Length: 147
Image 1 (cartoon, rainbow, N blue to C red):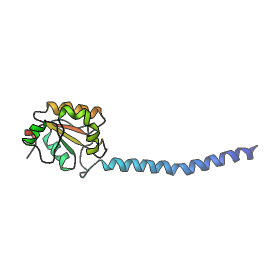
Image 2: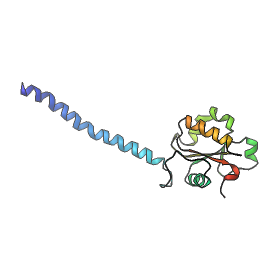
Image 3: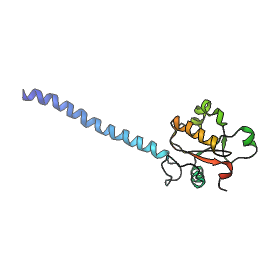
Image 4: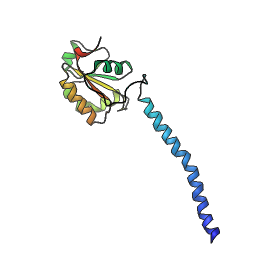
């Protein structure tokens, strides 16, 4: 009887011993993936981000955040922050897949949104957060961008 019990326990113990290192590897992979979202500046805050903080917005953009101008194409053509991508605020819900592509599929990558005054950018920020983006800030208006 004792021999029969050991015969059952030994294979189970061996299986557990072999599976534990695989669990560790999965945790390492997840940690590495999260580290990739830190961009070029290790001192960036994790988020969620406060709104209308031009210094933070510039820090994020300088580190590689997506800069999204949600004004109309006509407003964008009259002047915009260098490097900004223009997606009209009214089109954002239909273009969420495109925005995901712009961040390489990483909804943890920081996104800075602006418009003329901050109202439309606030609406877009809420839409992005609802879509799973967790590091979004509303710069406010174009004139709030620090030079």
